[in-house]
Image (cartoon, rainbow, N blue to C red; front, side, top):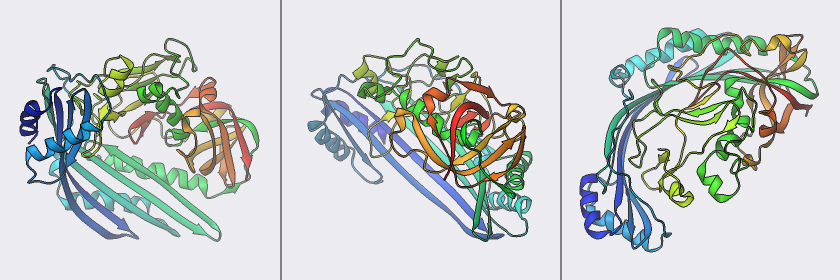
Length: 444
């Protein structure tokens, strides 16, 4: 379909065009209280066309299977009449890197196999007085992208997510603890066991409730608990926020802004990850990009539009949906020294990754409430804890309730007390536990 779109766009648009076609098949199952609650398969496909005409850019999309190419081109041209003027240059054909994005084992697994994975996890988590919910999702996708300058690429991809949540209600205490495996292939039995062990270990520590500490304290954030600290940094490293003039890092390239132990890499070529890809949604070849190196800001991510406005080159981070225009977006974020972690598991199974020993009194934070709300890019945060544990004399003594943590992400990343040995994937982010000094902890 995109070949027809580009053929018609070459005739009608004087500044070129690019197009994306994507088909996605999703299989999802859910188990609750030991029973299969739901199982189903959905499929969707669509095309997105962007044109540049008379110096202005327009976008149109469709999920209709029978739409004529001329009609979609006409919609994009109509959009361009009201679009912004932009010196957008479509990339020419280039060699694409090799990255494995499709796994036959994941794509070919029948529904019964996915249900068996869910039941296996459920059996490992069942305990008296608790309710266990398990979900398994499998995605198979085909992506094609091309432009009028001759660049093109296509790839198939798979993605698998296995998640579980254990609920325990005792009087007025409602406890929910969950975890997830995400990758491009089905999890092995060892990975399912590791997922269950992670949840059970945290549940065991959470059964005892203790009073929270208070003051400016050392706090260990687990890989899953780092979102409030990572979100401001990733937003500030987007070329879009730099162009808007709201990024605190916009004028800091080449400067040491963070602790020397803090590095940040985006790696679309990481093996075994669902977000990996050989090219972005604008025909730009993928590349591993070091954004922060040993505390020094190195660069920002750009798509074609933000790069054109900033007079820079796209970094291959254009992401587009069927109906929207491309925007800068991350793939696989890696916190630490860089490298290319694989799979869905991690290192040490100890909570805190070996960082608790030197903490006389502090917190271990695994989950916060309200992350992403408010003025995120400014770095300031104040969130109640959803799941956190008190650390006393290097040991977890119990779970804390009615407590909140606060601070500024940029300031806290300047004083890292240590990185754990438990690096693992939490969604599309790989990170170890991190000890940060001077986090404000208060009761609620």
